[in-house]
View 1 (cartoon, rainbow, N blue to C red):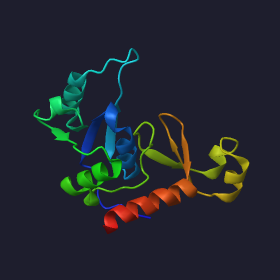
View 2 (view 1 turned 120 degrees about the vertical axis):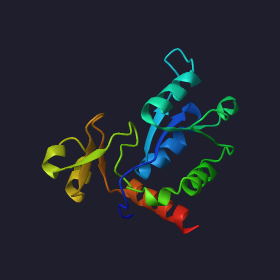
View 3 (view 1 turned 45 degrees about the vertical axis):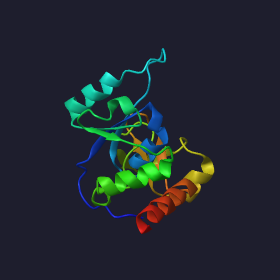
View 4 (view 1 turned 135 degrees about the vertical axis):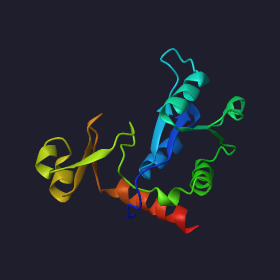
Length: 162
């Protein structure tokens, strides 16, 4: 497991082309909003720029039309692991890690909860075999250290080993 190094200072907002990258950044505890297209399928890049300025977030995008705007980090690679590595290197994210502290779905900070609180809300086997749980107070997703946690920890360690 990675150690909490510092309070989060880096904040991103990513466009709809970078969903997998967003989850990886959230896995590290990096505050990363994700802007999806509207229900009608329309995508408004100006909304990205507006949120970026209002919330002091760096825009992550593969949209070449945005690469010359301020606060934009243009991602060239289509490979999510290459994208992830370049952001870690270029923003020196190793100093910002607070792994497994954010909801992978909605970006909110997770809160540890006593085991009794999640009784009946997770599969019986999980409740019987796990003792530490966290919950997202925004979307109510419950997290525990199962096989996904081990796989993600391995991914993180491999990224920083290289």
